[in-house]
Length: 275
Ligand code: KMH
Ligand code: ZN
Image (cartoon, helix red, strand yellow):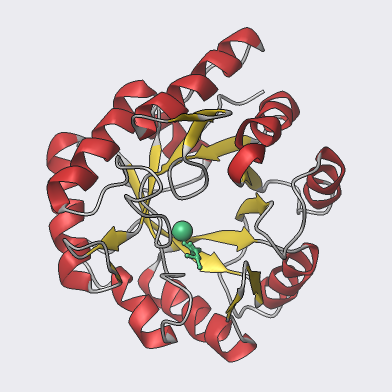
């Protein structure tokens, strides 16, 4: 089995300091959280950024500031900027996060419209085609974010038509968002069984499902994402002090289950990234 790639989703667009005071907003706070995750064993940081007051933004200048500062502290890290942004942002606004120098190695590509709590996360076919075209042109490897079972079929069809980058594909099954596919082992197996040979995949369990979905992913040979974007608690009733604490829990689980953890460069090989 390949080594386990751990991604830390350190910030997100929806969680706030009111929910957990350790959620990062400023550049310094974002670097602090990235470094805590990397020091604990994360190979990848999935990045959203904020204005200093916590407002989510996809501005490439803010992404540039944050990615430069993160790279100074963690030179080897793989950064996956979000193109999902926050609910309600326009497609052009969302895509601005990829206008940094250098062009990101990877970026998220969300695979369909879905409920998102009380909101709707809008990903129409034209939006996804535009994002796919940009990633093909710029050589950005997408991480295909599937929140619903049907999202997988949608993106596989688009890949077959050449509308988004194809093989080898990296999927992130984000399960347990209120209104979307529940975070069950059954659902995870259904999705994993349908991906093309040679693909890689990550499981992200939302909220209380963070670690109950991490466990089967570790055993099944997948990869794991944790972080404040997805879950604010280390265990029931105990807020995590840092993203590093959440990553460290996955590292300990992997050790118990006999799976080694990948460095960023090992993750690049597993994901077929060129540096
Ligand atoms: N903030 C969510 C609405 C992504 O990063 O691509 C969408 C999201 C997905 O976080
Ligand atoms: Zn995200």
